[in-house]
Image 1 (cartoon, rainbow, N blue to C red):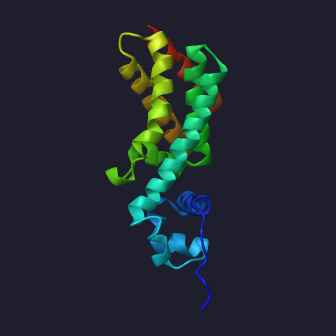
Image 2 (image 1 turned 90 degrees about the vertical axis):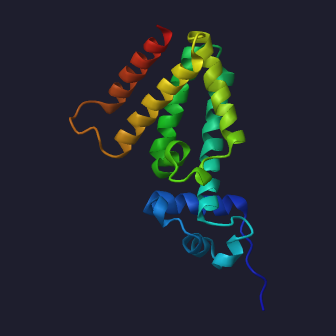
Image 3 (image 1 turned 45 degrees about the vertical axis):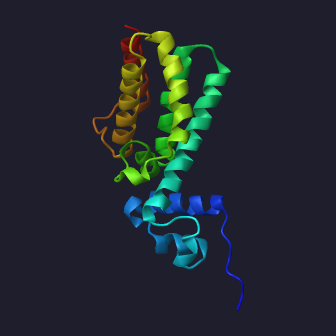
Length: 185
Protein backbone atom coordinates (compact mmCIF):
# COMPACT_ATOMS: atom_id res chain seq x y z
CA UNK A 1 0.00 0.00 0.00
CA UNK A 2 1.49 3.40 -0.95
CA UNK A 3 2.26 5.95 1.75
CA UNK A 4 -0.36 8.69 2.13
CA UNK A 5 0.37 11.97 0.41
CA UNK A 6 1.57 14.70 2.73
CA UNK A 7 0.20 18.20 2.47
CA UNK A 8 2.15 21.20 3.67
CA UNK A 9 0.48 23.85 5.79
CA UNK A 10 0.82 26.49 3.01
CA UNK A 11 -0.76 24.10 0.48
CA UNK A 12 -3.62 23.40 2.85
CA UNK A 13 -4.27 27.08 3.55
CA UNK A 14 -4.06 27.93 -0.15
CA UNK A 15 -6.67 25.27 -0.92
CA UNK A 16 -8.99 26.52 1.83
CA UNK A 17 -8.69 30.11 0.64
CA UNK A 18 -9.15 29.12 -2.99
CA UNK A 19 -12.36 27.22 -2.24
CA UNK A 20 -13.67 30.06 -0.06
CA UNK A 21 -13.03 32.68 -2.72
CA UNK A 22 -14.27 30.61 -5.64
CA UNK A 23 -17.34 29.01 -4.05
CA UNK A 24 -17.97 30.87 -0.78
CA UNK A 25 -17.27 30.14 2.87
CA UNK A 26 -20.04 27.53 3.05
CA UNK A 27 -18.24 25.45 0.41
CA UNK A 28 -15.22 24.95 2.69
CA UNK A 29 -15.75 21.45 4.01
CA UNK A 30 -13.38 18.72 5.10
CA UNK A 31 -14.18 16.70 1.97
CA UNK A 32 -13.86 19.66 -0.42
CA UNK A 33 -10.49 20.66 1.02
CA UNK A 34 -9.26 17.08 1.06
CA UNK A 35 -10.20 16.67 -2.60
CA UNK A 36 -8.46 19.93 -3.48
CA UNK A 37 -5.17 18.81 -1.91
CA UNK A 38 -5.41 15.21 -3.10
CA UNK A 39 -5.92 13.38 0.17
CA UNK A 40 -8.81 11.68 1.93
CA UNK A 41 -10.78 13.74 4.44
CA UNK A 42 -9.58 11.76 7.50
CA UNK A 43 -6.01 12.86 6.66
CA UNK A 44 -6.99 16.46 7.40
CA UNK A 45 -7.80 15.70 11.02
CA UNK A 46 -4.08 15.88 11.75
CA UNK A 47 -4.26 19.61 10.93
CA UNK A 48 -7.83 20.55 11.75
CA UNK A 49 -10.40 18.80 13.92
CA UNK A 50 -13.36 20.23 12.02
CA UNK A 51 -14.57 22.70 9.41
CA UNK A 52 -14.33 25.63 11.82
CA UNK A 53 -10.64 24.93 12.33
CA UNK A 54 -10.13 24.88 8.55
CA UNK A 55 -11.76 28.29 8.30
CA UNK A 56 -9.70 29.54 11.22
CA UNK A 57 -6.56 28.57 9.31
CA UNK A 58 -7.74 30.82 6.47
CA UNK A 59 -8.62 33.63 8.89
CA UNK A 60 -5.21 33.32 10.55
CA UNK A 61 -3.50 33.45 7.17
CA UNK A 62 -5.43 36.59 6.20
CA UNK A 63 -4.67 38.21 9.57
CA UNK A 64 -1.00 37.40 9.15
CA UNK A 65 -1.02 38.77 5.60
CA UNK A 66 -2.71 42.01 6.69
CA UNK A 67 -0.49 42.30 9.76
CA UNK A 68 2.66 41.99 7.66
CA UNK A 69 1.46 44.71 5.28
CA UNK A 70 0.51 47.07 8.11
CA UNK A 71 3.80 46.44 9.96
CA UNK A 72 5.72 47.35 6.80
CA UNK A 73 3.68 50.55 6.46
CA UNK A 74 4.26 51.46 10.12
CA UNK A 75 7.99 50.76 9.80
CA UNK A 76 8.28 52.97 6.71
CA UNK A 77 7.04 56.22 8.24
CA UNK A 78 6.72 58.23 11.44
CA UNK A 79 3.58 59.93 10.12
CA UNK A 80 0.54 58.48 11.94
CA UNK A 81 -1.79 59.79 9.22
CA UNK A 82 0.19 57.81 6.62
CA UNK A 83 0.02 54.69 8.79
CA UNK A 84 -3.76 54.97 9.15
CA UNK A 85 -4.29 55.70 5.46
CA UNK A 86 -1.96 52.82 4.59
CA UNK A 87 -3.88 50.53 6.92
CA UNK A 88 -7.16 51.38 5.20
CA UNK A 89 -5.56 50.81 1.79
CA UNK A 90 -4.07 47.49 2.93
CA UNK A 91 -7.47 46.34 4.14
CA UNK A 92 -9.06 47.40 0.86
CA UNK A 93 -6.41 45.52 -1.12
CA UNK A 94 -6.94 42.38 0.99
CA UNK A 95 -10.71 42.63 0.52
CA UNK A 96 -10.23 42.94 -3.23
CA UNK A 97 -7.97 39.85 -3.32
CA UNK A 98 -9.92 37.78 -0.81
CA UNK A 99 -13.37 39.19 -0.02
CA UNK A 100 -14.77 36.01 1.54
CA UNK A 101 -11.75 35.32 3.72
CA UNK A 102 -11.54 39.00 4.74
CA UNK A 103 -15.06 38.62 6.11
CA UNK A 104 -13.70 36.01 8.54
CA UNK A 105 -11.56 38.73 10.14
CA UNK A 106 -14.57 40.83 11.10
CA UNK A 107 -17.74 38.76 10.77
CA UNK A 108 -16.89 35.11 11.24
CA UNK A 109 -20.10 33.04 11.33
CA UNK A 110 -18.92 31.37 14.55
CA UNK A 111 -16.53 32.56 17.28
CA UNK A 112 -14.44 29.40 16.77
CA UNK A 113 -13.48 30.77 13.34
CA UNK A 114 -12.17 34.12 14.59
CA UNK A 115 -8.47 34.62 13.87
CA UNK A 116 -6.04 33.74 16.63
CA UNK A 117 -5.71 36.72 19.00
CA UNK A 118 -1.90 36.64 18.77
CA UNK A 119 -2.14 37.30 15.04
CA UNK A 120 -4.58 40.17 15.46
CA UNK A 121 -2.60 41.81 18.29
CA UNK A 122 0.16 43.30 16.07
CA UNK A 123 -2.45 44.79 13.75
CA UNK A 124 -4.20 46.42 16.69
CA UNK A 125 -0.92 47.59 18.21
CA UNK A 126 0.11 49.39 15.01
CA UNK A 127 -3.35 50.83 14.55
CA UNK A 128 -3.67 52.03 18.15
CA UNK A 129 -0.17 53.51 18.16
CA UNK A 130 -0.94 55.59 15.07
CA UNK A 131 -4.39 56.62 16.32
CA UNK A 132 -2.99 57.54 19.75
CA UNK A 133 -0.68 60.07 18.11
CA UNK A 134 -3.71 61.78 16.55
CA UNK A 135 -6.48 61.14 19.09
CA UNK A 136 -4.81 60.42 22.44
CA UNK A 137 -8.02 60.86 24.46
CA UNK A 138 -9.89 57.90 22.97
CA UNK A 139 -7.73 55.89 20.57
CA UNK A 140 -9.82 52.70 20.74
CA UNK A 141 -13.00 54.46 19.59
CA UNK A 142 -11.09 56.20 16.82
CA UNK A 143 -9.51 52.93 15.68
CA UNK A 144 -12.91 51.25 15.68
CA UNK A 145 -14.37 54.09 13.60
CA UNK A 146 -11.64 53.82 10.98
CA UNK A 147 -11.87 50.03 10.85
CA UNK A 148 -15.67 49.99 10.62
CA UNK A 149 -15.70 52.60 7.85
CA UNK A 150 -12.94 50.89 5.83
CA UNK A 151 -14.42 47.41 6.21
CA UNK A 152 -17.93 48.64 5.39
CA UNK A 153 -16.68 50.44 2.29
CA UNK A 154 -14.78 47.34 1.17
CA UNK A 155 -17.74 45.04 1.61
CA UNK A 156 -20.06 47.40 -0.28
CA UNK A 157 -17.48 47.61 -3.05
CA UNK A 158 -17.06 43.83 -3.24
CA UNK A 159 -20.83 43.26 -3.21
CA UNK A 160 -21.55 45.77 -5.98
CA UNK A 161 -23.10 48.27 -3.61
CA UNK A 162 -21.88 51.35 -5.49
CA UNK A 163 -24.22 51.46 -8.47
CA UNK A 164 -24.67 55.19 -8.93
CA UNK A 165 -21.60 55.61 -11.08
CA UNK A 166 -18.74 57.91 -10.29
CA UNK A 167 -15.19 57.10 -9.33
CA UNK A 168 -15.17 54.56 -6.48
CA UNK A 169 -11.43 55.09 -5.89
CA UNK A 170 -12.03 58.83 -5.46
CA UNK A 171 -14.93 58.07 -3.12
CA UNK A 172 -12.68 55.85 -1.02
CA UNK A 173 -10.04 58.59 -0.78
CA UNK A 174 -12.64 61.22 0.10
CA UNK A 175 -14.23 58.99 2.73
CA UNK A 176 -10.84 58.10 4.19
CA UNK A 177 -9.88 61.75 4.36
CA UNK A 178 -13.18 62.57 6.11
CA UNK A 179 -12.74 59.79 8.66
CA UNK A 180 -9.12 60.81 9.38
CA UNK A 181 -10.14 64.47 9.79
CA UNK A 182 -12.88 63.31 12.17
CA UNK A 183 -10.38 61.30 14.20
CA UNK A 184 -8.14 64.35 14.47
CA UNK A 185 -11.01 66.60 15.60
